[in-house]
Length: 472
Image: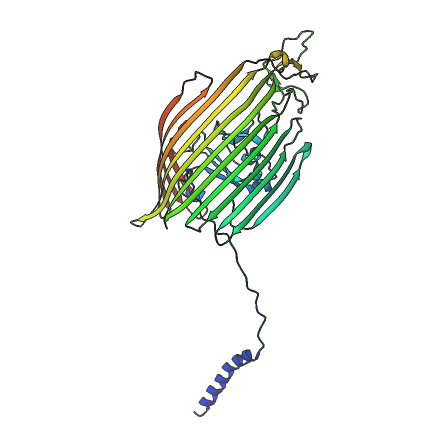
């Protein structure tokens, strides 16, 4: 039995040997520290964000909502709002004959136009909400404006295309004070649309913004946006027998004697503050002043009867002159959003109050027919359209618009396991008048309830159903 201590000693020395060798080895190289930086962007619980009522993933929201980031549009080479909206079925951009930079959009057959411009350089993306609870009859298009961020970055871009298309832009964001959480951003752009149809369309835009954040406690932001546009309307080619006339597609028949112009000035203010760890108050104010002059020259009616002086394909032409149109928009929105848990059930509560006021004064001068002689689409003779003679009084009309709307919204989103239930109500009262002098105003009040239920089947799949009533 004397062999046992010897075996134990051998085993102990064998086990300890690797440790001794490790201590004798020289120290290995020191790894370079890895520093991870990420921008802490708090969830923006914006007033008036009624597509969700409270901040939530689109997957968790029982309404039809689509979001198109600006990066996706750049990857696709898109330059206009129309190209962006091609990504969303059932939504389209159309021409209001105000140039390629000022397209308006049609949602479920309803026109939605805030007249704020659609230059992609000043925007971070496009969000669309096609649901009856939206602010507009067909839905809402939100052009997301770029805002200051607590980071240092910048970019300069230049692009050119066929027929004189060009865009230059610069975007610079700087931290003014890291300790105080202050940042500023400036964005400038100069853009010229394609002139393959021989109509100019130029836009200059400038966006200035400053923001201050106290982390999760509060955020303050102010911005100014300036947009100048000069363009000539494009009415395309006419049709005969339900088909475009057989002429080159780039042929123009309107001859405005000067460019149309639009000047937009937008001021936006935002503030939000945490009333408690679970409750947040936000305030938004937007003011727009727009002044425009519109000069249009276009074909009218059907072709004239064929005579020796009016061969086949001869159309009358007309002209319109709207000098000094003024549009003013003031919007104020307040909202409180809160997350609460009662009895093991999660509630996301939202209460909002929105005020919107828009006025429009649009004068129009009657242009004598003799200033716009007929033109033959197959053999056009240009240079015959003349501006109205100076000093000659022209018949004048005035179209006005006065819209005032107040809306209150309440919503509760209940989360129970894989189920989400949403119940909401919006009460809207508005006064609206649009037309010439003597047009009677319309005053209406409507309630818009909504109910929704969503079931998450997996991390990537969900089914939902919702019922809502809109205000058209």
